[in-house]
Length: 278
Image (cartoon, rainbow, N blue to C red; front, side, top):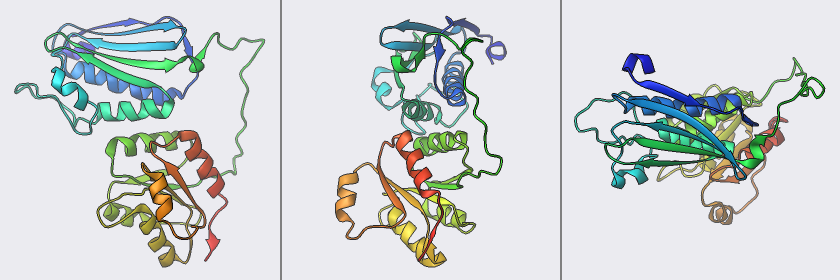
C-alpha cells in the first residue's frame, strides 16, 4: 500500500511482547495503517512503540492532510468522514469506529491527535498488565491446549444496530470459536432466525428501535418455536431495564453495555447447555 501511494513507511518497533488476541490486534493496527495511508498523499506513515511503567504505547503517525480541531470529537463515530475539500477517499468511514470498539474489547484505549496540514497521530495504549517481560523459553514452554474434536461451540446470532459495536463484537466472538451471524435491524434478525437450531444463542441489544426491544424479540421467538431459546440481552441502562421486568426470564442473561467480554463469554458458556422445553 505504501509503495502504491509513493509514501514512505517507517517502522520503529522494539521487541516488546504483549499478551492479547493476535488477530484482533492485527486487525486494529491494519485499520489504523489503512486510515493513515488513505489520508496521506505524500510524505510518510510511521509506526513506533514505547514502553514505560504504565504499559506499552503504539503510535501510528502520518504526514497527511490532518483533521480540523472541531472534527476530532466525531472522528470515531460510525460512517463519519472528514471533509477532504473535494478529494475522493475510499472507504465508508467505519475504520476508526471499529478500532475504538476492538480496542475496548481488548482492554486498550485509543486517542487521536491532529492538526490540519500537519498530519495525524493515533495512539494505542496497552496497560502494563498485558505486557510480558520475556517470551517463553525452551525451559519454560508455553502450555499446549488439546481441543476436543467432538466439542461444538454454540452458534450465535447477534442483533445490534451500532455498526462499530456489532462488527467488533462479531469478530471477537468468531475468534472465540463461535459461528456468529449478525443483524443490524429487527427485519434482518427475523431473516436470520428462520434458520434457528436448538443450541443456538441469541445476543441482542435491548433498544432495537422505537417499538421493539431485544427482549421482546427473544420472547416472540420463544413463543414461535416452542422452547426457551437461550439469550443474552445487552443494555446501556441495565438498572432501568431490570426494574421494568416484572418476572424472571428463564435461560436469559442481562449484561451492561459497553459489554465486558469476559462476562459475555461466561454468559454464553452458561447458556450453552441447550434450550429447555417450554
